[in-house]
Amino acid sequence: MSNIKAVLLDMDGTIVDAFPPIIRALNQTFVEYGLPQMSAQEVKRHTGRGDCSMISLFGDKREEAGIRFLEIHDEDYLQQIKPLPGAEALFQWLREIGMPCAIVTSKSQLRAEAQLEVLGWSAYVGAVIGKTKDRPEKPDPTPVLLACEALGIRACETVMIGDGIADMKAGSRAGSTPIGLCDGFSADELTEAGAAHCFESLIQVHGWLQQNR
Image 1 (cartoon, rainbow, N blue to C red):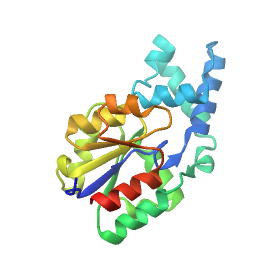
Image 2 (image 1 turned 90 degrees about the horizontal axis):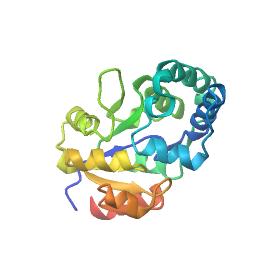
Image 3 (image 1 turned 45 degrees about the vertical axis):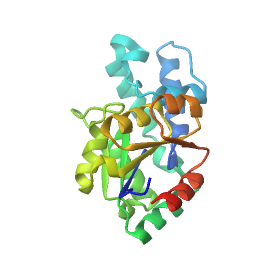
Image 4 (image 1 turned 120 degrees about the vertical axis):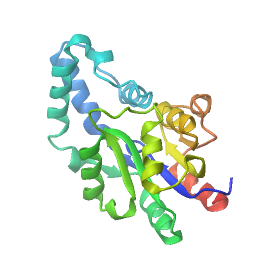
């Protein structure tokens, strides 16, 4: 494709490694509620499907468990956030060529904005669409469409880059071109969810964008 006018990016597992505090907080919450813990890969796959609401894990105790999870998570999560290889270079290149980008994440709006600020990436991003009280989450296409609206660009002129099933489904349903990063899910799984292309790293995605913009 050669009509790419904007890039949409998932956050956790796509441009940053933010899973350590998520895994630690979730497993500590499991322990406190007498539930079995998850491996790192299981947590990635669970969150990547877009079905990470507390109801599927804690049932009728989801609200109090969700509060406890966030208490543990927020103790030091900003100190544990690490950029993934290629993220900074991709942001710089997009700025150099004048192509806008937006973050589309299931992380809360405030936490997403805080992470970007700590990493020094806020100026690279034209819009941040995170989780808010009444906003549907991926795999619903609404966050993708909101990002396109904020950038003033049609969804069909964007790519949605992410590492989860929910990213691919949301992008596809919105009319964006989903680009998958293989980590928690295989290329076959991401393709089945709607990915047009799959890569092993953000560096490879960057190379593909340079050839296809």
